[in-house]
Amino acid sequence: MTTTRTLVTIAPGHQLAPDAAASALRMFAAGCPVAITEAWRSTATQAERRDQYLTGAGAFALPPGKSRHEVGEAVDWKASAAAWVRAHPEHGWRFTNRREWWHAEYFAALDVAPRPAPPNTQEEDDMFLIRDAHGTVGLSTPTGLRQITPAQLETWWNLGYRYPAGMDALADGPMAEVVASLGGWVK
Ligand SMILES: [Zn+2]
Image 1 (cartoon, rainbow, N blue to C red):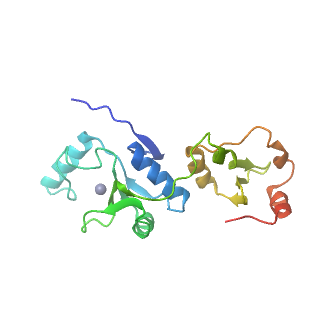
Image 2: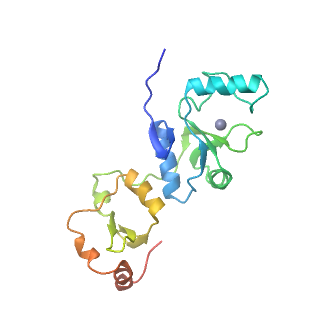
Image 3: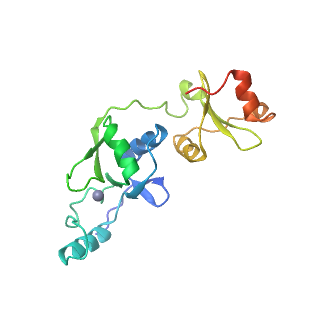
């Protein structure tokens, strides 16, 4: 029997269930490295891993149907991200197996991190992406311009932020001049 599951892409080749994905995207926006070994995996893949484990050819794996990877609520993080996630428990992730430092599961009830303003609200109107003719990207916020990297741009885009119409004036000069005229980047 096939279960249809809603999955959201959080990084190329990696998907999670919607709530866990939203949390992951918030963490990336907050500075968590996008460094993932595996997120969602199919039950077929889980069965393969279990077979490999039972024949001594692979690491420990739960039987198919028992892993939270299969429901898109677990991530095997690479070391840099695992350290960040461990240091920021407010996002709802817990490392549930002390023999697997990389494996964390998402608990919505433990996710108390502040939410960015959702799209189409008054607050969202105050924050938007800008880009100059040289490709430098920034996030305009009520307190000033915040510098973001190309990798972070994808995260902010996934969170619903867009280049608004009518902001072309900022592209007239290099971003550096715009930023200087505003007194520098804000944090
Ligand atoms: Zn895992």
